[in-house]
Each structure stands twice: as structure tokens, then as C-alpha cells.
Length: 188
Image (cartoon, rainbow, N blue to C red; front, top):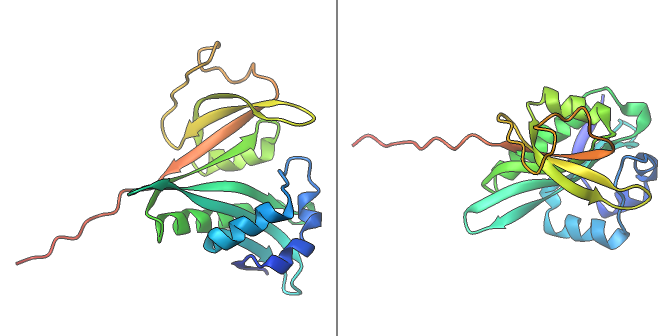
């Protein structure tokens, strides 16, 4: 049993065990606090009944005017709590919050190609590859990215006609389109 709740500033002192994973992007404390201040409803944590942090998702709303979408900046689960469906639940929450109240039409994110488990999860959630983003991740190793959508595959900037099996050390960029809101017509 666990609970999903809004992230609090004090959680920053307790989430190191989650962030130790080499596949997790980490940021400085002011970065986390700026997200928490600007998009508190897109920053959630999963906890055990004894309040141990199990996982978190950090997102933001991007756009202008009426053209908004959600962005997953980081999502990670502590190793001892993986394969329990926590990431899927946090993704579903972030997608709902991105749609309401932000009127977002999709959610985008980046994931390292070397993170096979995450890629499998996103595939099960209906994601597919769209195009390559070169050298997206920098650091000890540099990785490319794929830009993808939920339903249709459109490969561009690719020298292998869409075949991703030959690519090495890449990243996948995934996004999901929300269904357009149905308009209710009032009867006269």
C-alpha cells in the first residue's frame, strides 16, 4: 500500500535514495524548488504508509495562449519499489493534471535509450518513436534522443530509414496526445 501526494519542499531532504540511479537526471536544489513553486500540482511523490519516499514525478506546463502541454522533467522510482506500477500511476496523474487545469493537449518527456525498462513501460502506455534529437543528454556520456508520438511513427533526420535497432546510446523523446475535449451542445 502507498499514497500519492503533492511533493513538499522538505521531501528534498529525503529523496536521495531515489535519485542515486544513474538513469535519473538530478538537479540543484533551487531547480527543484522553482518547479515546486511554479507547478506544485505537477510535482508528486509516492510514499509508503511510514512516509518513506518510493518515487516522484516532476513536471511543468509549457505553452502560450491556448496552446499548452505538460512536460515530465523527471520521473523515477527507488530500486526496491520498481515493477509495482508506481511510474504508470504517476504518469496518469501528470497527464490528467496537464489536461485539467492546464488545458494541455499532450505530455512530452525524454528518456535514455539505455533505460530499456522505461522504454518498455512507455511502449505499453502507447508511445512510439517520431524522430531523432541528437546529443540530447550531456555529461559523462552523450546520448541522442528520439522524438515520438503515441500513435504514428514519423522518422526524420534518420540515416537508417526508421530502423532504431542499429542505434547506440540514444535517448527517446515521447509524447502523448490528449483527446480533444468534447463540446456539449445545449438544446434550445
